[in-house]
Image (cartoon, rainbow over all chains, first blue to last red; front, side, top):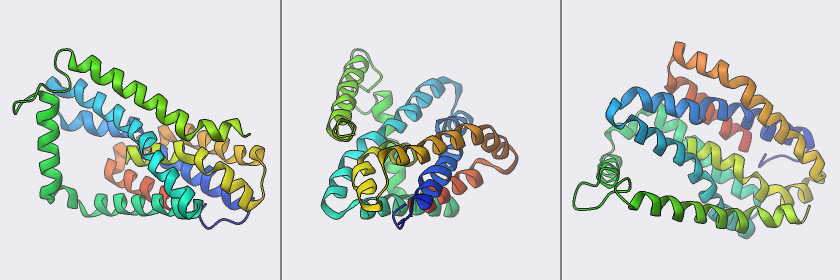
Length: 154
Length: 73
């Protein structure tokens, strides 16, 4: 897409190739992987987190949109190319398992979810409903700020 | 990976105006690849899941990441 100058290139890039990618990396695949590596006790919580991770993409589209406005849409798409290449490299090299920074993030996330380490935890008591409400409102604002202007000008 | 895949699909509306203006296609013409994208996704999902069981999740997800990279490039 980023190097496209013809309609056919857009059809192949945005249509076929980006259509193939979610089949290989979508929530169904991520949930299958997550369900196999966690215990039954925390499985439903982990699957919920995996499901919510998909929504992070919409949140990340806000800075991507601003970047796009400043430097051009082709550069914005190259940002996705870089991120995808990075993910593919990490998957191949399995570097993320040995990475101490990633392990620290996982440990912190585990404490946050479980409420250990002095915190209340995202799934504890009323914090759960507050988090959900805040996230839902945030998602609506993200949609209004990024996608609605494009749709209104069609 | 999930975040990246969902992010790119949901960010396409941001690229709608500059892309259609730059390449010289209409919004309706841009809707065709989006329809193809959704068809490819839904049709290939069972195939990808079946292949993941046989060849491993990592191999299939690497191919997905490469497809994102090639598609966006």
